[in-house]
Image (cartoon, rainbow, N blue to C red; front, side):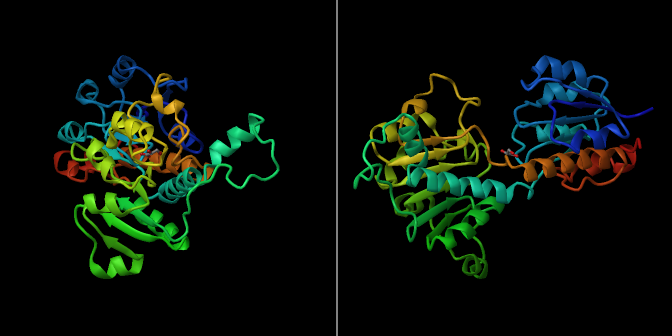
Length: 336
Ligand code: DGY
């Protein structure tokens, strides 16, 4: 009998066709995510689940799937999955680290440049027929990027990729991280360690690259925003709840800081009443960090391979919870 797989959204090819070659697939056919109840219903007889970061895979869902052997998420982030509950049940978890690093770093840098140089405001101004004078010496003046100071919060894979880009703009790069890097790595990367508070005080741009955990939720709060220079810009391509959005709105409205470039929000999709939508000093994007054809197609391939590997009784190429093997060895997940 073929393994039964539930896939919660159409992902780019060759993701689904790889799985369909050897499994019976039920694909949620809509762009809108399935409800919690729909996932619960489907999971009852499934051997494997391929999900997205907008699907909440909690203990209830995990316990509703007695045959479930693998959860493969089409994302590097995994805060939507109860990893501890899955591990306890012997369920392997695959994810997609490394693949979207450069795409996300490109987007963080686009937001940095776009916010500093008021790119989207200029575009709106022109399309709104506001451009009446050939050249105005003080029209839409932005702020320099070249030679300024960038503070990176969380110097993991994506933070480091942003640091490398910043060097091309002659920026001084500060970083903060729970465990600072060894000195030689700092030198190679051209970065200097600062405490979180020092980094907020000294940077012209602060870019966030931490995962969302209990420790990082609302890490950027009113008190920290108050530390920033009034000319500084905040960039968030990590996770919305790392920033206290109400405090950020206040900081932007009252000009504690100059602007923000945001790809992620506390609530996604953003609420139509969100005050950020009425501010000019922000650039807002709908969670596009990994949105390149190349990155998304690779993410699809890796998430399919993670899922299939477990059903073949093999280690998933990108495996989150290695400790699960003690609970259910791979010999007991083999169906293919
Ligand atoms: C992820 O993978 O976690 C990103 O936020 C979206 O690709």
